[in-house]
View 1 (cartoon, helix red, strand yellow):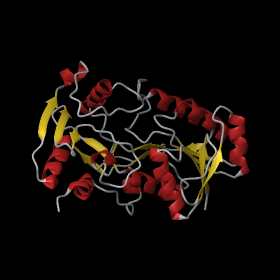
View 2: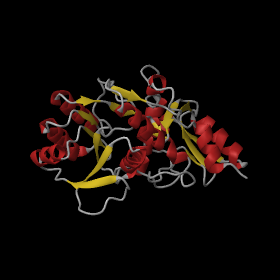
View 3: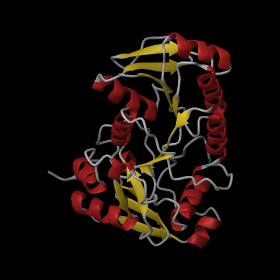
Amino acid sequence: MGVVAVAGGTGDVGRTITEHLAGSGKHTIYILSRKQGESPVPGAELLVIDYNDADAIAETLNAKAVDTVISALGPAGGEGQLKLIAGAKKASSTRRFIPSEYAAYTPPDAEENEFTAGVLRAVDALRESGLQYTRFAIGVFMDYFGTPNIPSHLSPFIWGVNIAKRRAAIPGSGDEIISMTYSKDVARFIERLLEDGDWPEYSIISGSDTSFNQILALAQEYTGEDFSVTYDSKEKLEKNETTLLDDSSYGGMDPRIMMSMIGLQLIKGELELPKEGRLNDRYPEVKPMTIAELISKAWKKE
């Protein structure tokens, strides 16, 4: 049994992780929070920390003998995550750290942009810290294609196929491969990895390697209805002229610019995760949900 602290453990991804770990009963679970209050997760205790003070963070981690910190502070964690890494480095009890990524694979030689800047800064800090760490690459969260009909703490994010409204605005040809994973399966793989002393630099997992044409076909099959479909070319995306299905965004970015950027990533093949080194092969007993299973559960007509 370990002692695990989840930063951002009441947020979308963080709460999913916290609930699963607390529910397993295998570890002592703390939620690191900026605010006082009652823990919203049974079996997890709330710890208030100041993300501006690495020394105070270290004192808190040591006081509870925290050996593993899991960060779920949003897109790349920001300055708060850097202070958290610094605090974990100072804490004598803490030896392992999972940074806040949970997204596409960011290779070691990745160029800095809106999506990678925070990630690369955190990785640099972890390399210098001496902490054992692993970076979760999960592709795109599968939850978005089941909302609101599947259990999920993630906020809605509509991209490519809007099943509820029977519409699709697909970037590229629709045959480009995109890897995706259900959020609850991410938590299951984290639980399994906590039992393992050997952490890879990248923890790559995928519930499905699919395409938007395949997702569209599944959606039409299980709803029993035809969809209104448009395809956005690379040229349109380069001009930020993506077709919006709603005003979904993430991290406050302009929706049209964000959708165009993600669409171009898809066309370039950057949303397909590497096949080698996947936790799916390392832990075959953990069976993640597939996109066909998720769409069936969420949208199949009775």
